[in-house]
Length: 350
Image (cartoon, rainbow, N blue to C red; front, top):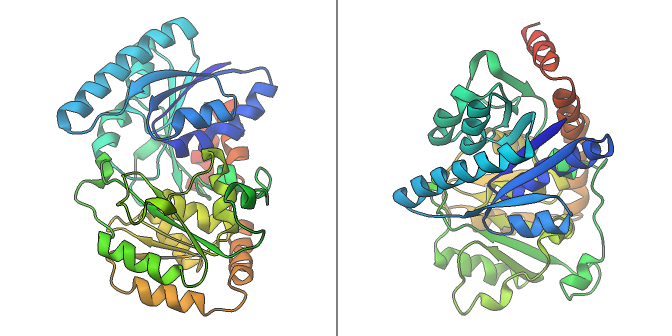
């Protein structure tokens, strides 16, 4: 079997990587196609995954239209040469269009609910896989699974935090530190959304620095007074850093959800509401604020909890016992498709 996996975001590399390792050991040929966005290409190189670069990421309406058409064009010719039997992605419009043009199967993961993209790829998808908590209904091609994307790569079956991260962070082992994540607000699903002001960010930094070291991960450039706090580690080490952090505060849903799966207390500030985040909040693994109001109080409240990480480890273990191994699910689903679709729909209807 030959598969093309189209990725648009660094998190998508993580989503599929363990599936790829398993299937390559079975002799399957798999090729990633990717936008040159953030650290996506760096991750593909770090994990020694075969890929083709579709080009850069463009902003603005005209830039996004140009980017879409360019990526469809390049993916088409890459596909003609590679001859895939199937396409996988996290809701990729180019993959859906090219799969239709070439008469191949297309399986999409979805967790953002970004209808701007979904309207463009859904008509050409053979299956859309979402978490069980996902509220939108995509009809007969829709399959819900009891897990999160982040479990696919942070489940204990696949990931064990490496304490060498303290060396990369240049701090003493077991030294208390915090990670902040700021987004650029340039993605299509960010339109009309918001998070922290610069004043809010500085206030949070000042509070946390009284209790430990602060590291910032930011999509956009940082002001001069915060630049020295920019985290400087290889991108594939970020999950180790999140795992040992005392607390995460940020605007990025992916990192907040990753912290929940890792058992690291997380505070997520964003007007965007996601079903996965809501469910993880119900487990007591993170706190979601749609405005900065109340964030400082919550930070101070969490800092006062003794054995904070131990409390979260217990909550994380409860969550994992109630969720599936998402990589194992994906492996079975793809390997036995389309029978797996019929089986999954049958189970959901019973």
